[in-house]
Length: 133
Image 1 (tube, rainbow, N blue to C red):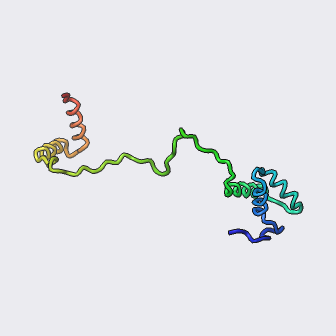
Image 2 (cartoon, rainbow, N blue to C red):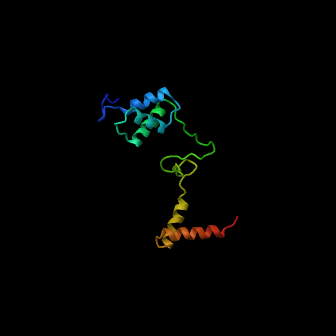
Image 3 (cartoon, one colour):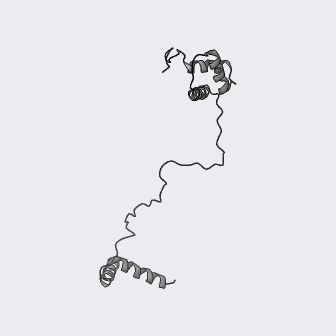
């Protein structure tokens, strides 16, 4: 929404003045705009930073800004959390039917390890390391 005329104390709408200067001369620089504003309105005080922001935004809106393009070889960053390695749960099929004898052997192994699953897993790892095919 545009500001009505006389929105500031001095009755000057700086953005309209800057837009008129840029439309009249596309190659005008920011300091030249400030100098022209001070020359046109000697009694008014201007905030330099606000005028520079207005200058940049107007040039951008008119398509006159010079923006640097990214290098083609530069890595692109993805926003958000990094993707983890997700595995789908194995669905039992007819080929992977429950082997009752293996379950009974696992039960006896746990009984020999006094119900400690970590000791049983270590024992299985040791057996696997000893068996070389």
